[in-house]
Image 1 (cartoon, rainbow, N blue to C red):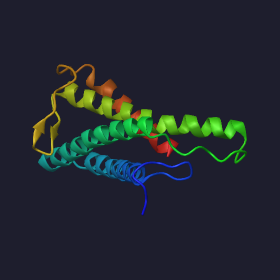
Image 2: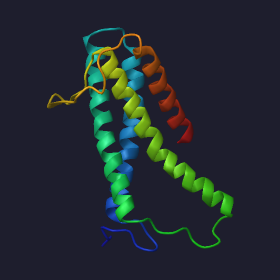
Image 3: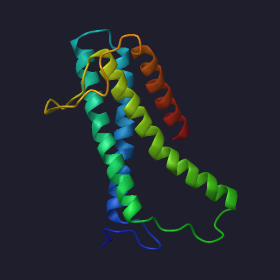
Image 4: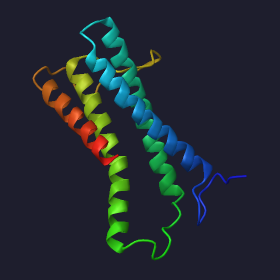
Length: 157
């Protein structure tokens, strides 16, 4: 039976489950965002965007949990001499970017929702506090920032 925690040679079941939950939800987010953006301004579009925001908040929580788990349960080390040092450095930087960029994209999306006055309502169960007051002048910049970070995430993946 697989261990809950990481070992010296393998990831534990919790790290794997968190990894695949985050990966799957990121894919769903891409698809939800693309589909909602393709719709004309309507109630249906707002409903799809509401789901997109709810999944985003769920991702925020899961990414933070995943980072905390990784901090308390370090991953198995790379095998010695498995790859050149520069590749190990790039791998570590890429891994960190795959934590940071989604968090920044979510934060930018949350700020954008706040700036437009379309607050995040987590699956109709909880109204998530706005990060800023409504600001029509700043909203387009935050939208561009959100979309740019999502595009960067796509490139990293």
